[in-house]
Amino acid sequence: MEHTKADIIFKDFWRSNERFADLFNVVVFGGKEVIKPEALHEMDTDVSGVIQLKDYKETLSRTRDVIKKTAYGVEFVVLGIESQQHIHYAMPLRHMVYDAMSYLKEYQEITRKYKESPEKKTEDEFLSKMRKDDRLHPVITLTVYYGEKQWDGPYCLKDMIVEMPEEIAAIFSDYRMNLLEVQDSDRYVFNNTDVQSVFEITREIFAGHFEKIQEKYGDKQMGSDLLTVVGQMTGSKELIRMSRNREVNSMCEALKKLKEEGEQKGREKEREAVILTMLENNYPISEICKLLKISEEEVLEIRDRK
Image 1 (cartoon, helix red, strand yellow):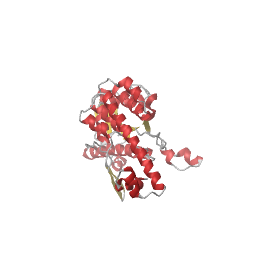
Image 2 (cartoon, one colour; image 1 turned 30 degrees about the vertical axis):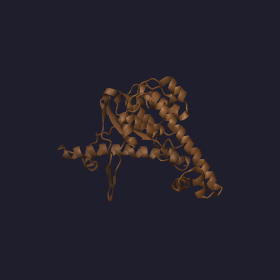
Image 3 (tube, one colour; image 1 turned 90 degrees about the vertical axis):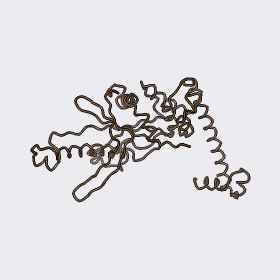
């Protein structure tokens, strides 16, 4: 089976400026058209850099999922998307590090230009390696969490910090992250039909509402990139494979495969529960293999996994 990495799937999907802009306008800017698709430009996703403070030096390697910049006023804004399948209890910290690395990358670009410039500098500018009037550009990151479980992780850096006395909390520098939960995305109405369809279909699959999907999307033709993203969000490797190989091109065909895959997973879970119950009741592994017609390796794998 062809295995397509999740980051590549999402990069392909959000490469479209229309989808990218609509996601930010609806989720981050409350439906206001702040980001124009035609003004978006791809940026290098590698934000690795070297942090150096006197005798301390460390190289950090970081690659963002998708990052673009857009003109806003006379300057520009940097926008990034991070896709997250599992709840991450340090996500605000990751946000902060990713954004800091983006700022560091721009600062290092400024210092390179500074060194090449023949213009006279003040002592403070020389030490700072940037001019007094040099400015960085704002970085806004949005995490799209597409896991089936409801997000119960932190939403800001303060949520990760021990309980603070009032005096400390008052001066603590918090860092809030922008988070979209696909499971909870029904409160948003997206203008881009691809974004709306992917999130809506994913939600309904998680809820097991296949009839509703059939009723609304059954006869609609869907691009392989849309079906691939739905497959990734719902954990259907088979749907990813089929959409990549052009074996399905409508939601009707995709639903049939998803239901079959779901039923198969259900049967596997039931069998797994039976095996665990038999192990708990001290059934010999050889007897379990004989009764359920499975190999010893399968029984041991299920036992060790639990």
